[in-house]
Image (cartoon, rainbow over the protein chains, first blue to last red):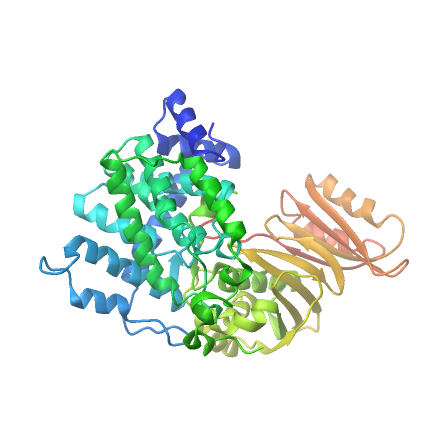
Length: 288
Length: 224
């Protein structure tokens, strides 16, 4: 049984148990919650449905309450991702997807927190295009969500998934790490590769601060979903190439916690430091 | 914590604490009143007061009072819906002592004159906690079926109430007792593994010394 406090324990338990990692994650969680496996699977499927629906609900005319956010998903799509552009079709599709979902959230539309509302764009931005590109069956996508949630739960237990507690590394960084592991799964990588992708996803956004302008989930949150998605893709690609994280995954998460604890209050979702404290950002500071 | 605390909830953005949690607070307050309020005086504290507007916190609280869920696409338009359904509301700010920064105080009045005052906090991830009920300190989340019994502070009330639950096979998970002062009014907050049901509530209401019985049952949603 996975106890979700250590990536190493999760991998070792899976090795001895005989079930694939995604299934061991599901079974262990069902046992802990005392719920039926079909109920769990049905819930995960509804989350996938809700992610796809949220992506379809995007309108590039929507604007956030402050007016700071909206329309960039459409801008990105119109620019397009021809082979003559820097990032090409696949990466452009991913970037547009991350912007769309981040903007949907800022504009009070229905999204799936993954792991948080502010970082809701990362997972769907990479998983949905990956599924389309490789024609992956629906069950495989749902299994990938189990993989991402399993790694996410270890991150939450060992470090944090809250910006107020650990900075943006805990939100977009965690989302990227979860997505990286899920991508490795979808591409047929090993459990060790998933763990390494998770570790590299975290490492490469370690220290990212949470400094939202006006304390709102808008600037820079929407665009940080794009960097989270890019981080996930690059970490997964490296892991699939056999590149490993030199620092063991659990130690990376411990470092994430330590860095989160060391971040000053002003850079943990208070809207008082970083971009929020720039002359531009101060114009949006809440009136008290 | 479980996998669906990591993925999910499905919610209307932009913030699980300031939006989804605020809907939950409204829902919980409505359930504790036992019906849709006709009037609501809503006071925002801390971060709810300072950044609530940009997060749609006021709309979210009203949406909850109307019985909407955090993933209902009508959450942003709840003010118009409130006008249709006859809910009058006012907003203000307050400074509460020693509570979570994301907190609100809701003073609700029902069409039949029933009143309740609920103080609640949004703890993150859409989870909430009621910390005050009609001026008395308490602590419950509404994640379990919860019975709130107001009684006069006299001997025997607790055993009579738990006796009713025991006879009906309702298992008590937690029990909290608070009182304003000796012999004054007191509140029992009873979290149960099963809903007590209307008959049990009626039986409790008829017991000597019982002033008011409210309950809330976690409503079924599409998702955990």
